[in-house]
Image (cartoon, rainbow, N blue to C red; front, side, top):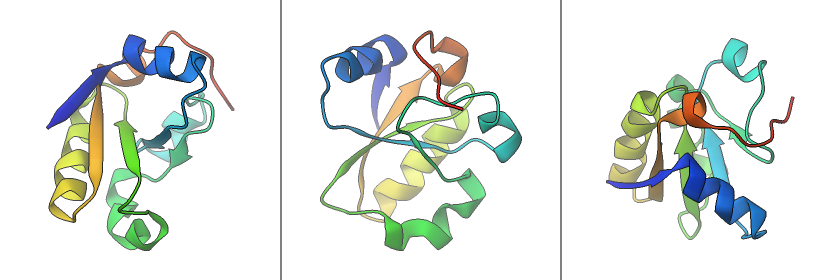
Length: 99
């Protein structure tokens, strides 16, 4: 599984790279803020949202600590998607937040 640190992800955002982020945390967690531009799809809702994702795009997956996003990465990889896990999750994120 590919992985990236929150610092590396923040650098990509600062460089205005066109990246797609999926936040797989629960609603109550996202209410405390998410990475700007991130798409919120709770982990358990991924199967019913696959049709909203593009297999030709690359996605970075984030959760609270990196464990649920790793599970999501495994699931999406098996479904044919190109994904990267964000190590440390939002616990390690020191960038801007969107509410």
